[in-house]
Each structure stands twice: as C-alpha cells, then as structure tokens.
Length: 109
Length: 380
Image (cartoon, rainbow over all chains, first blue to last red; front, top):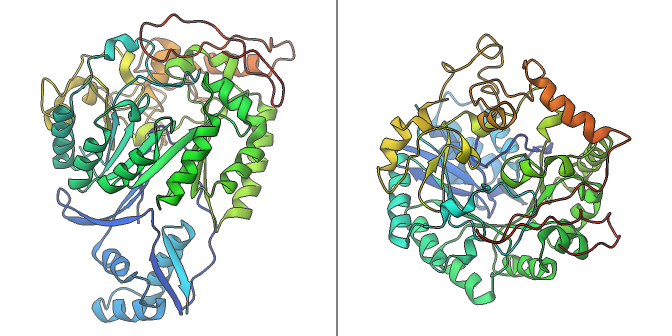
C-alpha cells in the first residue's frame, strides 16, 4: 500500500497508532473514502480527501469485502481461498493499517 | 513520467476574505479572465483522461462561481473525488443541498482562529459565526468535514483551543498547516513567522491531541519548513503527481509557481495531456536531471526532490537552486537569518500585515497586526 498525497503543500501527515482488529469486527469504508476504478491505470483505487491509493488485486478484493457485513475472519478466509500466496497475517495487517488511518470503520459483532 | 493524481482547480481568485497569508499570486489582476463553465468542463474531461482522480475546487472562494454546482456535477459524473476548499461564506442551505445532490464528496472549511474576534480580524471580515454555522450544515447533510487552519505567529498559541473547537463542531479531520511562504504570505513573512518556542509548544499540544483523539479525528499537522533540517518533498516532486489550473486557464505544477520565469502554458491554447508531457513549465524540474549540487549527489534527492522550486526562486532568484531550507544549501543563510529575526528578543512585534485584496484593483492598506489572543485591536 503506497498512498499518494495529493494535497497542495503537504509536508507531513499524522497516522495515529491504531489498535489491532479482531476477528469478529465487520469493517466497512469510512464515509469519506471511496473505492473506484481508474481506467487510465486499469486498477482499483481508494480515494480519500487528499490521498489516493492504487490497489493491487488482493488489496482491491479485500476492500470489496469490507461492506459492513463480512467479519475480518470471513475476509481472511475468503482471501486465503482466492490467493494461496497471501498470508493471513498480511490481510490482517492491511486491515489494521486502514483502520488506524480511519479509512475503514469497524463495527463489532 | 507518471500520470497526475490530483487537479487543483482554482476557480477564481476573488474572495470575501483578505487573509494576509494567502498563497494566491500578488498580481491577481492577471487572472481576471476566468474560464467559462464549458472550458472547465473540457479541463475536467482532459484531466480525467490523463489519469486525475481527485478534483480540489479552490480559489479564492470557489462559491463565488455561480456555476460551481455544474462544475461539481461534471467532475462527479467523470468519477472524480470532489473536494471543496472554502471559507464557507456563501454556503447557504440551498446551495449546500445543490452541491450535495451534484455529488460533492468532501468539504474543507477554513477558520482563522477559534476565537471569533481574532478569526474575523485575520480574515478581514466578520465571518467566524457563519463559518461555524456552515460546519454544522456540512455535518447535517452527511458530508465528511475538514476544518482547515493556517497557523502563524498570531494564532499558533491558540492551537489547543482550535483543536477543542474542531472537536465541538464534529470535524472528521483538522488540518493545522503552518504558513508556507508564497504569494501574500511571502510578502508578510516576517510578521507571520512564529518563534521556535511557539512551535515547540504547539507541537506538544498536537501530539497529545493525536493520542487522545485517535479514534475520532484525523489531525494533520503541516510542519513549518523554515525550521526543518531538510526541505519538504514539495508536491511529491515537480510535475509528478499533481497539477494546478489557475482561474484564467494557466497550468502549473503547483499553486505557487505563477511567478517562476517559465513560458506560460494554458488550457486555452493546448490540450492538458500535451501540456503535462511537454510544456516547459512541467518539464523544467521534473525528475532529477536539473539538480545542482548538493542535491545531485545527495542520498535524499529522491526523498525531497531538492525541496521547493518556488521557494528557491523567491529566496535566491534562481528556481534551479537547492531549496535554501536545506541545511546543506549554500543559501541556507537566507532562511537562518529569517528564523533568527523571528526569535530575536529585539524583534519588533508590531510588524504590519498586508491583507490580500478581495479582488484585483482594490487599494492595498496595511493593517495592524492581529491583537494577541483575547486582546483588542483595530479591524483591518
């Protein structure tokens, strides 16, 4: 995940330290974040007020499952089924980073 | 050469506010022939084709454009993430509802201080109360809200109160941006530059607030580069990720590059794609080939890209020099002297602030500096 800052004179941004996510959390995109497709780059992208993240295939798949319905455990298991090469820990870490940045919100249980 | 991610659409330089730190150019009269609605539509289409994903609608005050709703709708229909950067003056309920319906994604509202009289004095117009009301409206209509505050010598001591206000209004993000010295801010630099003690105190407050509010609010703190060891990686590199279109259609790699001695490029003359790829204003400092020493052989050349070209130009008269903010720059003394003056015991604390005019052609009147927080001063 390599966020690109698109603000004007940005020199530093705060990434608050985030707690981990638990298996029963149901993540969904925060309301100021949008998942979209960029035809120029032919990639899924995550849009935030001043940042763009160009997603790889597994990142895009994870975020599409972040619909407030699937639990973290379900997302991890679904990704494991789709990609033999994506370790569970990485999926969890990806979600944790996005929660810490407040790009994902979680509801418990 | 990469595709740009963001377009800063500066729709107009007209503004109801007169903030002395405005980054708009000093010669605003050169930008009065504003692009028409259909010209902006074409710019947005060309930007989207070029790979732009975000459209920041700014100014001046973008709400002064009567066609703002149409422009937002066009950007939204192209799939761009739309972000309105506004003083909030003119954000009536009907206008806000129209913008919401047109697909506006996010609203950033500036305040000049948490304290009404200080905010109004810095803005040069009674505006604080309307801004707070507009923030309520933004939340009510379900938008994410960012509160923008430019920090400088006359309000940085209030940063704790500013953060408390951001919490009160339910801001999702707050941007505390130390003044960057371009345009009117450059002109007012010596009156605006805070002392080291002021900055250190503010940073303690910001760190604590981030810790306390981490689940509720993003706190973005833009550091004052005059006090940095290394320069900022300005715009992520010259003409690398973003472009700016000025009210009259000039295309720039950043919102401060108006005055650089490079040939104009305009969307009225050429397609955006051609300008991005080939115009001298884009290619002059793209990549690392242009770099002088000490940047050329520096291990940070791909980290901070030599810093800011506009700052190098303003300080040294040569845009191709290392950003003098860098402690390795042969011109670093220019920054060190300004910092020294801002910290001198003998500093004259009544340096005048020149407000930017609301529109070109109005006479400039130097106004007294804003009073200390809570104090009284004559209005600008």
